[in-house]
Amino acid sequence: MGFELWGIEYLRNGKFSTLRIYIDHENGIDVDHCAEVSRQVSAVMDVEDPITNNYTLEVSSPGMDRPLFKLEQYQHSINEWVEIKLRHAFEGRKNFKGVITGVEGDEVVVQVDNEEFLLPIESIERGRIIPNFS
Image (cartoon, rainbow, N blue to C red):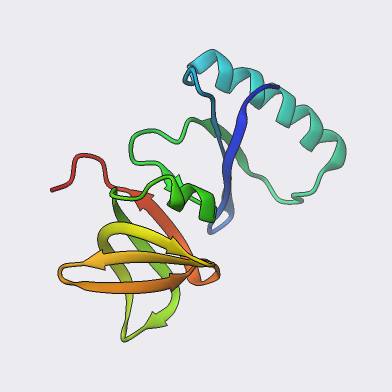
């Protein structure tokens, strides 16, 4: 459809679930784009039926506080402030708030205060840009 699939989140909250699809485009995303993708995805989901319980489908742009899903997204976000939550504790912590200073192999380099951490991409549960943080 000409949009970039930025990422997908599937969130369960008791008996309620949300399937959130983030799309992006070099010219931006508006409500009509989200509605168009939502109609297409809904049609496919109705036929394929991969999610058996009830859920809400949301289509959105990544926004200013964009979530990060792929190593390439972290690479393009160097020098940005980020919040990262790990699946398992690393050096006694799961949450990191700092600046992305690079990507080395399959690890995201984050500077928190005066310390650098190399976080394997497969260990990251959730990452999100913090806009205008200083």
